[in-house]
Image: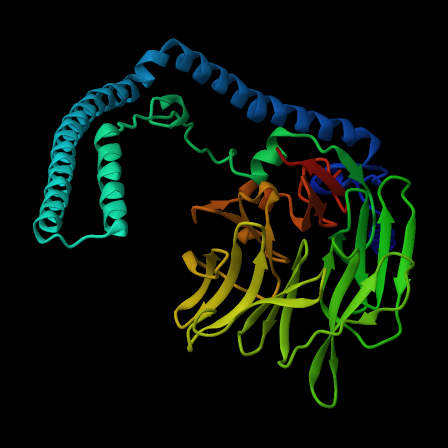
Length: 465
């Protein structure tokens, strides 16, 4: 009898709460909870919901009430909170006044000195010309051209004397100069993508169950890569239609999308000799890929696109920038400009302002920000692995370092080389993130960790302000 009951129990999903009660006969779980994904019987589903309501009352509502008290206290004592900041402004005012007085006095002294020097210079020119004139009169050694030269010199001196003066330039447009500013202290929720997710609702929400790596083609078209870039699914987020591009040649890697060419670019490795060829695969017409004929004489390590630029990183750690509108080489940088002899470049990206590199040094990996001439502005030590994505944020205000399969290390490095952890984004288990113009496109993992599970395996569009 006991054996029969055990077999029946093992083949039927039992209510989660019934399993914890020894004095009641277990009932089958027929009602699922969309949050915790557990099953409950009709009797205990109400108890489960009541437990959730109690948690909401004791945790969230109590927290809300505590925050209300804190905000009220802050409003009552606002003047006390800003007292120190007001003292800083007053001190700055006094110090600035003293600096202005000192600057004005220095300007007066400079004006007197420069005026005296100008007068001395004019007197010396007059003396030299008088001496030259006297000598010619006494020696009777002059001709027509000598008279014309002397006449011109005296006329020029007369003009300089009559136009004598020093112009004082005072910048009176003080409003255009940010002498002092008030800025809000950064908080954990005021940090780039975290702030976006916490303060905005997505402007578009789609449920595209596609396991391929995601690319943003334009505002309404997403692409998903499969089989080493042999298949690419094009998903229209407006009419929800799907088209697949397929090719028959060897597997490719280092896929990137060129908005300018409206094409995917990727590398294919030839076997003999071992070499990498660059191919262009247009999304218009969905034809076969074409080999790009660039005059490249080194083995390619990595490629990336930005507007009309193609960046090529070679195994020698030479970097070349090519123009896609002409397929001509624009700039080439070699060692030691790209990196030192004991260093290697793992990744390179660019936007209109900077180049961003991940460089491996003897003591670890570093994010390096560089100007348009490839000179280093600064660096930050980071963690590097194969699944790192380095993304330029919209408005070019910083760089997102996103680690696939290890979202606990997601952070942003701004253009001042400050690091901002994205804790909220990490908690949501984001699978992919791409940018397209002013949009940030986020795809969540199949096990997305939000309360209602509604983000599971979905894609959201956020507008960057």
